[in-house]
Length: 109
Image: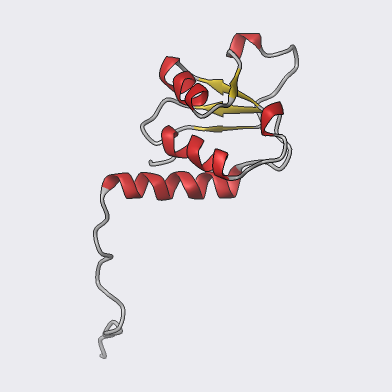
């Protein structure tokens, strides 16, 4: 019976990264993979990664960013949206029949 030996050029573990770098990476990946091409409403959660999500959205330089309404889940996410110069709308102010195109929350989990 032979035993397999793992290749020696692959590290057994990845080098450690700090938690904020991990959150930044998670946020960038989430926005890159899930931000729709022509959204009307984007949900913004309240987790600690949301600051990075909003930064990643701003970095997209979306041509219609002024026409996108961001729906915060609470006061803190509303502040993050405002501080980024984005437009927010309260959930209960959404027009009848409006759907949130995507919601970002818990990107670091």
